[in-house]
Image (cartoon, rainbow over the protein chains, first blue to last red):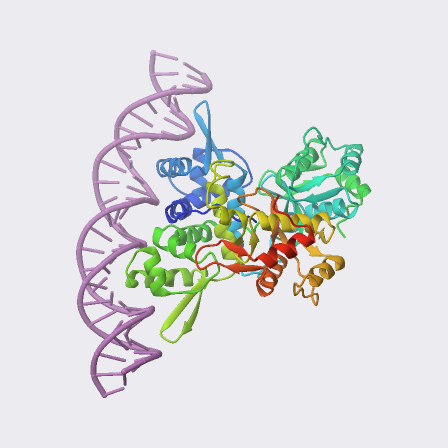
Length: 228
Length: 228
DNA sequence: CGGACGCTTCGCCACGCAGCGAAACATTCG
DNA sequence: CGAATGTTTCGCTGCGTGGCGAAGCGTCCG
């Protein structure tokens, strides 16, 4: 949640028109997990020919929503940055009738652990964040959420590679399925990627769901993180 | 910031197309301060004839972005709810080149105190939030930010009508000009409206800027809120 | 070197829709 | 009741743009 620089009508309209086409929307949504995908794959995801997809991708690129990486004869597109992903996520909020059709929907795996762009969300993300707050390992100030020294130490001794060179700040991120906050922002991303490195979490081939490893669950449990 | 229910391409595209027209964007932006405005005024703000505006307003209404209130021969439109305002604000973030063109822009009044939809933002909002956190009057848990009893007491004794019947939860909201968090969500809205009632703050006829009263500044100063 | 592949550019068609003026409808006021 | 005002509905025109196939261009591989 943010208050924002005053957009003028043309900037807002331009942004809207980039989203206004189902084909472009499909391509953006296919990239919300943070992956980079070649143009052909995005064309297929959107259900259009490569020719049409190419035009759409250029518009999104020119609009600053996508970034391009050329690799041989493939051209990999990804979301320009985390703010674009955050914007897409936040758009969904205006579409949700507040409390409707939420709880039991989606598969159980997705509810338990998933990525919210680049950080951990779902029951596990909420429980992890609750523990950090509960044990006073996480403090809040006006710059955001930040690990206290005690938190850095305990996470590190659990096997998580936590960098304390520059203090990273996170932000609270309301969890879609749990209706509680979890940890997002740079700090959330850093801790989540440390969990990947330590093999506490594994990515699944498709979708946003994540698979906690047995070791990861044991380590988290030792920290006091329980899934009820 | 939120992770979101999975929007499909058509929902996202529909939402985008509602924003994609400068006329509609202008009308939405004119309503971001939370006011209700008659159709004719919105037509004028968008620079189109009433006939065209009527069609746009209907689309926005059908799309769930606006709410309508009929009063005599006037029809007052306003943003459907706070989530719509939040969405519009968050859209601006994707347009801002991270750290550009921010600090000195806009007038000083707007930077000092303004409304972020319905709650207080700007230097004053940030300072107020920092004080609440600093004095430990505000706690954070997984449901959000919540006043502690000591905080309720001290605010009340300063003359702010703080209701403690049901604990209100706020959320952190990144301040556009200050790059620090301030207090948003239901709690932020409640405290801000209490400040209006206590005449600590006054609305200005136009725009989002707010005018703190002399008494309000004195009371806030007594709480420890300073604008440096 | 030549074919396969990935992607882009080009030219074309067709649909959607924003815009307006005119007219209809509703409400208020004299 | 009739005029004035605010808003909507209707019919129309013109522009923007999404879609495709065909062709062009770079890259990889045998």
